[in-house]
Length: 172
Image (tube, rainbow, N blue to C red):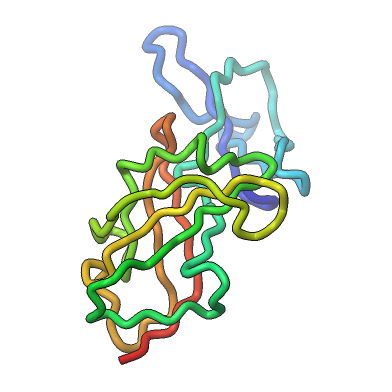
């Protein structure tokens, strides 16, 4: 989660155990914004206590670095090599521990099944946190002339979707 992300408040229906949007006195869904520290959110309009099991964004935005050390990363789509992608950790997100590596896809849309392997953790951006380094088959990424960003998608080990984007430059 990043500061400013919207979170919707839900309650558990005691009869069905289903999550239902929590409503304010006017019948409108209650939403909050993640604070600057990205650890809490404030909600306005709460009229009664709600049983909230958890607030999980539909997709977690993660920072990635395509071809660490190369900015922007240059990619030759016809290459039979590999493209390294670092999934960067933050204080709230430990990439090596939280990413389900088997779900990772990367390329033109982020839906390309191009994963070769993940080589493990390294502190790519020198922030003292371990980042996850994975390698993707270049020719399976479907990059084309004019593409300006690469997209990585996957899930966490708790089955929450994640997505990251970084700038690229296509070369022939």
